[in-house]
Image 1 (tube, rainbow over the protein chains, first blue to last red):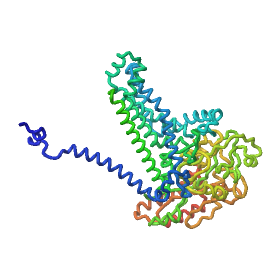
Image 2: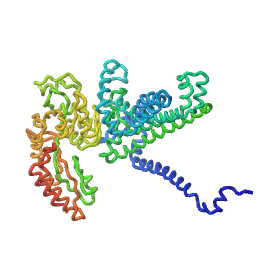
Image 3: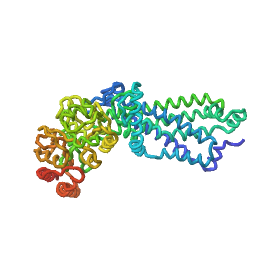
Image 4: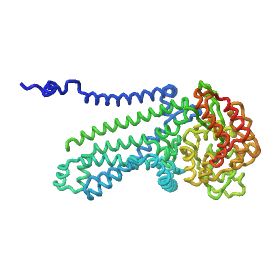
Amino acid sequence: MPAPQRDIISQSGYRAGPDLFKILCQGAALVTVLLLGWIIYEIVESAWPSIQKFGLDFITTSAWVPNRERFGVLPFIMGTLASSLLAILFAFPLGVSIAIFLSENFLSPSIRQTMRFVVEMLAAIPSVVYGLWGIFIIIPIVKAFGDWAVASLGGFPLFSGPAYGNSLLTASVVLAIMILPTITAISRNALAAVPKTLREGTYALGATRWEAIFSVILPTAAPGIVAATILGLGRAMGETMAVAMLIGNSSRLSWSVLSPSGTLAGLLANQFGEAQGLQVNSLMYAALILIAITLFVNLIGEAVLRHTQKATAGIR
Amino acid sequence: MDFGASDAAMSDEEIAKVPSGVVMIPATAGEIVFAYNLPGFPGIKLAREVMAGIYLGTVTKWNDPAIVKANPDLKLPNLAIQVAYRSDGSGTTYVFTQHLSAISAKFDDEVGTDKSVTFPVGVGGKGNEGVTALIKQSVGTVGYVEYGYAKDNGLLMASLQNKSGNFVAPDIASARETLSNLELPTNLRIWPVDPEGASDYPIVSFTWLLLYKKYPNAEKLKALKEFVNWSLADGQSFSESLGYVPLPAPVVEKAKAALSTIE
């Protein structure tokens, strides 16, 4: 009777000890988990005086006045959500369109390869360069648009004046460009992974190219596209430097996309350097909230991903 | 860490937390200006209540009667004033809000003094360069920056009304005037919060070197003393070209005396 494979190896003397590779991998995984736990523990500890003092009021009030020791981050939470959702609104249709274009055979492979490289290069540009570029290029455009929008659409609260160059809209437009490579690259991979047989089958049934794209290829690649969007959203929420340079860093709540606003990440970058006492604790509390929001977004993303995977499982 | 420097000198409370003691030595001085973007209107005069009013959001147009009153020769436009401030914590904001709080009870009540405060109006820029960029971007913007930044970027600067009622243009001479009228206390920590001299520029502050009272390493101490002595003597000649104010002779004397107490 043949012995199991593993026994043969140990008998021959090769793997007498424990599986070192397995231990190494387990250790690395454990360190990552511990690291996250440690970071959160440290943040909670430094935020504790502020958590005790303000509790949930910290999230629901809108006064951030360091010299009066009044701290509330509602405007920054709203600014973080609004700027990243607006960025997704701009970047999603653009990114998915580019991904479709790059994964179908509209152009010769060499041209597509070049374009793909160029789009992915956008991810290699440092944040501060986006910020500078935004100051010199996007701000004047948004300001001009804003002046026009206030004059003609001013009755609509989203476009109420006065229009500022450093505004929620400016930050969102630049954020959209920054997350475009993430959305494009991952969506493209998902689209390219749609089985060839599925495409051929669709065409064989007499579908046009557009029918094939919209009713078969896109739905099949949907989990990947959703994942791309969630990753983009996560990046937009955590983005700091470019946003701090462009959004106007105001703690006033406003409905208008043309008004200055502020984000949690921007608040931390701006004020941490010279903060002291309760302000430090409150900035840590704000950091904790930012982590919680991003975690929540990732969980939703995970849930949506599972749901769409189940829904499209039949055609895989 | 062997030494540091700041526009906002340490408080007694902060000094008490340093076991080896602290000596603060004025190294140079700077002035903070109201820089603005209104081409064709150089040297606008801003009265005390206007300075506070702009940052309280009560003076909102360039042709506000309070501005026109001090500038009867200028035909100021009916243009909105856009306000720029520092979004990061900063000694510049500290000195600026300290002065506005001193000249306006309403400002003191609604905003107050600190390295980062919350203004009821305006847009925040990160650093002197961020505020400078905001001012350059759109016509009608006003902001507070260090004199050097405004000068290097060719920004227009307002003449500010001082305590004795005169309008003083920001330059090295008027800031030096303010400093030479100061009587320094023994710890050398003083802010000309609201200077009284007739030709004093109103918003001026020292920048202090923050040193320990005792250094255990003799070699380090020697090098540090040499450096600070050079800064107080030859170093001062570089101040003006960098947009800072050379220290008046009596201040240098007292600074050198303070330096000699370090061991």
